[in-house]
Image (tube, rainbow, N blue to C red):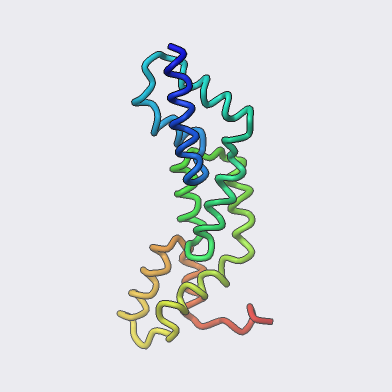
Length: 152
């Protein structure tokens, strides 16, 4: 019995040493190793109390890794998959709102850098931006070439 808790904690620490994980992610990944009910929760509670598990760091990590290449919708999707709470998610998405068009323009520029010449090309570029999680309104603005007002 005492062997299970350190084993679960050890597994959790190993996962946390690779990257930030939310509590929900750790619960999902470690549930199959829990032999006695409640031991996983106790181990995760202990790690959370020692600040090894931090929702704020998970959010910061996702924003750092994904925000430059993805729109708010894709970032939201990833945060939801990690089990991040609504308040932390709303705060993170609010940070992205101001830079959404500039980020979309940069992602588009890296891939295309030329405005669409016909409807087929426009649709292809629009799908690209939408798949990256940018809104339709932002994608339309980028494809209209309205860059001047953002660079001022």
